Length: 435
Image (cartoon, rainbow, N blue to C red):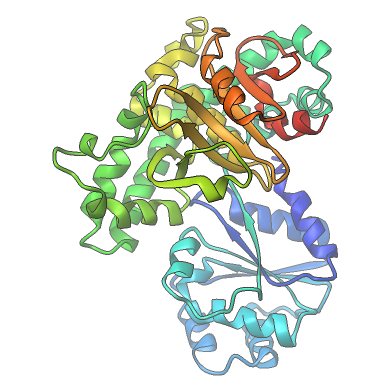
């Protein structure tokens, strides 16, 4: 299984400004596999240390964090020699020993010749709990479930993925039925590596659904195991309300849908916990589509999406028969799956800020607004081939963005101010903006 993130790891290895690398991401998105695969491809040797329930590592890092001492201890523990530049040192579930995180400062300052990659499913929570290491001493990489492009590659459609990357839309349109069929499969299977691998090998949607249920069960267990006990019931209620939130016509998060009388202050910690775990994407409203979008963020209004479209379908009880019912899949839950899919793909694009826009009266809503750093791109999501773009037009008249994008099941078409980008090509958004 190929992950595009491995290219970023090769760039990290060759950078003269390289620091210890922290890979963040939800549980079971493939962090361990990626680190080990990178070690195989890029180094003579790999030393892998899992810190989960590892008393010997707790003892090693409990006292002095002298790097020579730590390297010696790791060599004795693993029975392997650690050669600077030639050995990849992997710290997995590193959040379980907070002083191991702290030690990265000293490796950065005193022993930069060692190549260290770390990961942990709950790393975001550990960082927010004030673990002692200074900002600026580590590099970060976020890992998400497989994107649609990676799904194509994993299911034997590498040439189709390459065609998307080249943005040859004339040929892409000629082959659109293949892309649409693959997109239907992706809506059901999603991008969790275990589910994708099972589907690629067996093509069994029932087996995929069982894997997704196991993943969701593991997440629920994490709530009880790692979250503050007083917050666990709220995390659970909030988590299970997300499909209903996204099934609404207006997908703005409404606390009253969780339970009657629910207030923001009761659920702030629960939302933050789920965000820090990488299990949800919080997409904030902006009250103006101008650079930089962050300056116009409205912290009181937001949408919550899950980490993966396949898991959303599983939580909502989407049946596999929907796959063969024409394009009904794309309109399920009032387009919730489609908007979830688009959000998920946008989050995989590097250096892209993602928000949504409504005017103060609520008469104009643009599903997503992307900030590339140099321009703003309003993006309207259509589940079918409905090509009305009233909100995009209103947004353009008010803020005059260089480009507006409507993504739907229609073919690619570029007009003077509007691009119709097929849903299966949404990862090409940044490239379209540069063309």
